[in-house]
Amino acid sequence: MSLSRNQINQWLKTIDITDKTVLDIGAGPKKKWTRKIAKGNPKEYKTADVDNTFECDYVFDLNATIPNMKCDIVFCIETLEHCWNPVKAVENLHLLTKEVCYIATPFINPHHDKWDYFRFTGEWYEKVLTKIGFKKVKIVERVATKGKNLLKQFYQIEGLRVSKIRPEFNNYTYPIGYCVEAYR
Image (cartoon, rainbow, N blue to C red):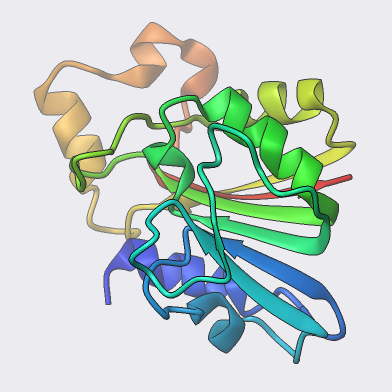
């Protein structure tokens, strides 16, 4: 299992879905992996994807018209970077969410699909999610393995010392992705 996936799984283990209605967007073919990792048993667990060949409960494009429904918890795990209109997608996530939306995306990650469009920063999440109407946003950085310094070496080789460009980032952590909790 990759470092990035392991960090997402550790985060998902802290989420309690007991007696909640849950929608897992971007679930892919029969994955339901968030249900297997998150704590507890949901009242209802539904999946959605844009691809109608997957055996999901709902087929819709998060960039377009969505079903008129709300779930207590919405998961959007490693899906938002595949949305060509991420602000519209987040607006739709807000519409679908009653309590909390959990989003995870890569930041430093190779292009990994023919529909891989964006990388997001913590600042982007904070600005966009609150502007759309989420009341509280908690952002957790996924970081490169401590001690390896591979990203730091890459930045230095490329002459991209973030602390030189932005001194306030002197202790920059070199995120490889983000896990976000957005509360209504």
